[in-house]
Length: 318
Image 1 (cartoon, rainbow, N blue to C red):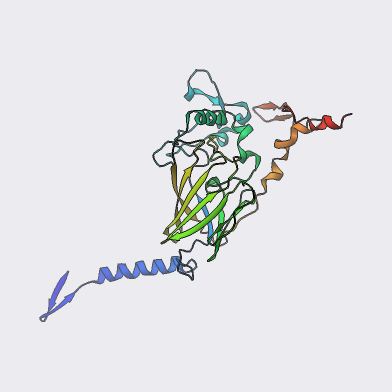
Image 2: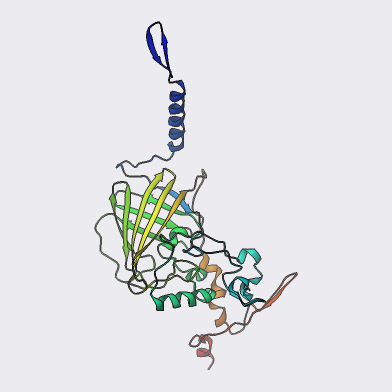
């Protein structure tokens, strides 16, 4: 709005100035403890971060399901299946939340034989998912597990520490030799393209999954990760996945990562391998330990099976 006073034009900008000052104060306050850039001018990713989505259940869009493992119910339709016995007692905690998915384009481009294996993996989730065994989660799965992770950034290295099973990896911004063998977490070499951290990751083994839906890869997996700041407290995480043995073409997932804003945000040890020893090795006991559980509405009896070749205790029976 313009106003003339005694022949002099005065531009009334009170509202605009107020808005600018308010915005400036808000940004300054929000960034006081979290500068947007490091001393060398790069985006500042230091801190504790976490994904907030359903990608660990299934990267692709999916409807909610009664259980990660199901069996036929009264009617012979997929939507009418009920939780299988191992997850029945968990109630809604054993269900699968629905999701719009994080795969660009919606569908993972499997080769026919690989798609059949993916479906078989999903049906045998309890036996096969490396997460249930507390194995190192691999990349990119470590980035969207439902646990926080921490980024520690320097000019030559970026260290990522994950709460789940104390996993960790290093992104090398300098020249280094690759590992002597394939690994769970891969070998990562990064570079800056403007404000985006671009990371090439390879040297994977084939022991990890992408999610609980049985999506998998071979040891030919190659990734290109991109970390782009959205704000001081959010990163756009984009990963291009290429594995010619499993997929017909490269494909991409995209999601935001959020900074944990608690004043005392930190990683708490979750060394889950100690909690799955009975799950992993209970079948090797000479006398079964966990046999029966009974609640108010359900009783569960467990019979352990010893897979061929794992009857270790028989070696010492003679």
